[in-house]
Image 1 (cartoon, rainbow, N blue to C red):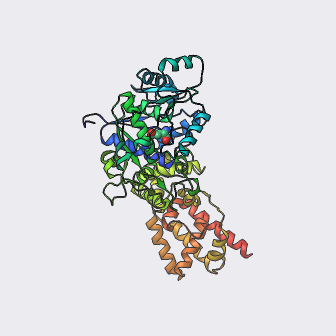
Image 2 (image 1 turned 135 degrees about the vertical axis):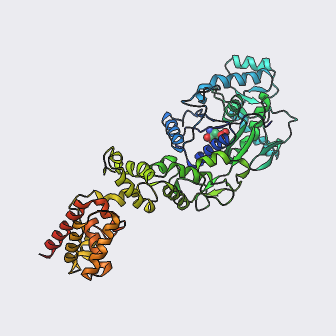
Length: 498
Ligand code: GLU
């Protein structure tokens, strides 16, 4: 293929289920390859399996593609010059292509019944023939005779006529190198079933050829289909594209990634709160490397630098811990403002802690909260648990452990709290560093044990023994709540002691 041919690649999911991690990676590689080469990325829906394909799955796949940010240049919702982009809407095209091959003598009608085929296979086995595929019984039927049987309503399939002198099929795969398929193993395979539906190996090639696909990048479970597809290209008279078959993704136990290993669909990762860019980054590096050491490869870099020669032929292992780590890196890299807008606002809204418009109303408060929570967040929803204490009003519950250990066990706790309250009340600027200074002063003046003193204040202000740093937590609560919460704690201690 000349290098001047503009790159055209496609991702062709079957809507028989959700978009899985493996499919998403295939989509990412196709997208990145198109972008890196200034080519076109085509999305095609391979929905010719009517029993398993559903519109709902198709919508789920499209949604997942959008969430991943894999924009397509041609396909559903976008259109394009080679449409339609759904196989069920292309049936007439396959029919015409099959008819053309019949007319040219490159395909033929086969009337063998399943029983006949089985008997031929058994006979081949009995004579220890190494070839046990279709024996070519109808290959040389007189076309006029075949037509007569078709017209008479006899059921038939259409088989491709693999040229006898074709020889081995050698596939130059960009990932696997040269792969040779023995000619002896290629029988005249079916391209149209007896119910008139075309087979995968036929529709794929007709579409890839008519859509001008230059590179077929897909999972290596399709490598074994490739020689048959090459035969179809040759019969149709179209150039054979480049192939790149990417290796499987394995679970931590070395077996093919599946439900047993946990979440496998893109949707589940979206719902768990992963950042879509981090997710794309992580999947892209499962089997592709920028340079062997860089682990953070933002989308723009992927879209510029992706190349097939850095795709590994070894299977890669899906490591949820590494994915979490990458996700964390993306969150850390956000500015406080971005974190507030993209993580805090939607999460707190979804959890019912905030109202719509919350971010616009108090941007500075949200940025401060972002600076506190960002380093403590692995997944976006983590912020809900971390921030919840801020939303519990002036008189929150104090959890049992905090009550017992930090407040009741210390005889002086109430006295420390009173002193802290006075200091907070007197502060001119109610910001984290002034609050920290004031608390340090009170702790020193009261002669309280440092750990116990902060434990008591923390219990009063946050209702718990663990929280983000105290000064900034109190700043975020604001003076009115900070004072009210101390009163609340004092009251609870008095009640408990009464
Ligand atoms: N619909 C096929 C699949 O989902 C596409 C295979 C191919 O890319 O040729 O496996």
